[in-house]
Image 1: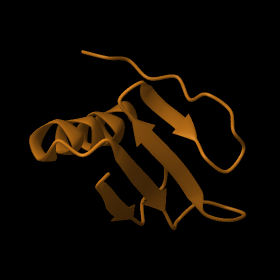
Image 2 (image 1 turned 180 degrees about the horizontal axis):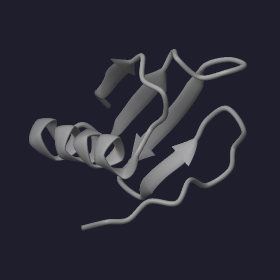
Image 3 (image 1 turned 45 degrees about the vertical axis):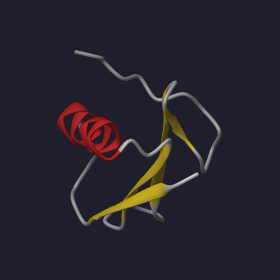
Image 4 (image 1 turned 30 degrees about the vertical axis):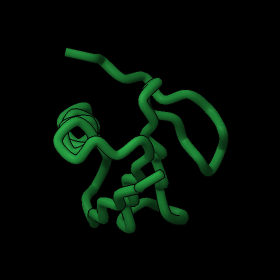
Length: 68
């Protein structure tokens, strides 16, 4: 299994960022990816992307994501 990692330092993760992550997964055929935002207070926002969608790997809660 191959993974990819996308690092950002932005105010907040939007659907555009999640769509970009999904597109990276499609292009590379990787099954698992991580979107990490270092500009999140009080810590780091880590989103895990799988073929089934995007979930938060820090809190284990599902993140709303609009598939287009």
